[in-house]
Amino acid sequence: MFTGLVEQLARVEGVEREGESLLLLIQTTKPLRNLRLGESISLNGACLTVVSVDGGKPRFELTPETIRRTCLSDLKTGDYVNVERSLRVGGRLGGHLVTGHVDCVGEIVSKEHHGKSAEMWVKIPTRLTPMMVEKGSIAVDGVSLTIVEIKRNAFSVWLIPHTLRNTTLGFKLPRDRVNIEVDIIAKYLKRFYYSTRGVSAHEPFGGSR
Image 1 (cartoon, rainbow, N blue to C red):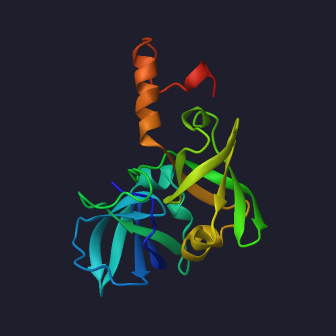
Image 2 (image 1 turned 90 degrees about the vertical axis):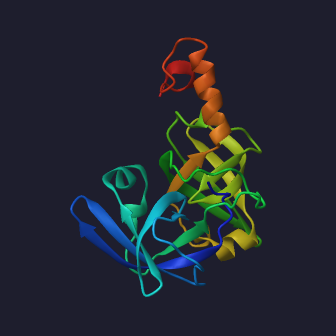
């Protein structure tokens, strides 16, 4: 479990193909103290497992499911990723509850700067917008943000100067792809809504995609 508060940026040091999977090696800006094999770390909002450590650099395996569900396969050497270690029990929850299980890949359609901040619109599948509310939480590339406005297949957020300086969203541009995770509470509400009506919980609200 994560909070959507990015701790640091890390540089991608290598991407290697291994069968149907990809091996991703990163170099963090600050050392990851007491890093252990098998530890869960969020990279751009996707919960990944440390499979090896090479000179202090963690390596992660992207399975075919991760490749299909996220945009991590877009990464190449020299790119940067948002890094967050898992939440400690009893720690501060400054963002919102983020599982690291990406719901879809969205596409940035606009990013307009207003002074030192920026307004960003992201296009997503219509099946997800019913699980969003204005002023609710959303994770974009693992960054906990507040939804400002919602349309049928898109939503907007404001990026404050701190977010622009310290996360990948500072240099993302229109047409770039981002990982999206909706609020987990909304997912449970959707399942409850359908279970009380005898309808498949995998169908979108309203029955249309």
